[in-house]
Structure formats: structure tokens, C-alpha cells
Image (tube, rainbow, N blue to C red; front, side, top):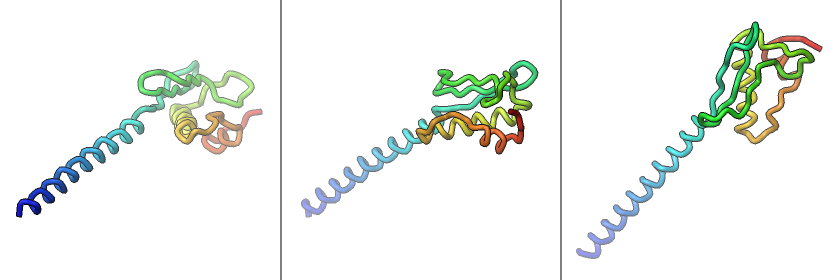
Length: 112
């Protein structure tokens, strides 16, 4: 009878340890999801975006990429969309550069 109680106690302790481990693991994943953010800001007569890692600014983009002249994004929505695209590339360990095709696809602006 005492062996049975010891085995049950051991299983209970192991279950508690595994539960605590998984709770800490899952909470760490949620923290990584909130680690990055995209913020838009007024830039000249348009909009720009910045990407933060925690509270540290890692990218500031006051103008549309791939455009010959320093042209801000025409509206906040387009700055947000391109900022989110760049952020998704960063999270996937890809080159965060934006191509003209991606710019046109996201915000339908045609410049040379």
C-alpha cells in the first residue's frame, strides 16, 4: 500500500513539474509575439512607419522604399501595411527589403 502511495505521489509531482514547464514555455512564446511592433507617424505631407523591438527602434522608414524621390506614404493605412510586411519578413529571418512589386501589390502606387 505504501508503494502505491509513493508511486502516485511521484506521478503527481512529475505532473506538476511538467505543467509548470509548459506554462513557462507558452508564456515565453507570447512574449516573443509582443516583442516587435509597427508604429506609423506623420512624415511631411504623408506617413511613415517605424519598427520597434521591445521599445528600441530598429527601422525608421519616413518614405516609400524603391521610389526615386523621398515620397512619404500617401496614407496611414499604406504605411502600416508595408511596415507589417517588413515585420513579417524580420520574424521569418528574411531580407526585410521591399521590392517595387511588393509596394505596388500592397498599396497600388506606380512610380519609376
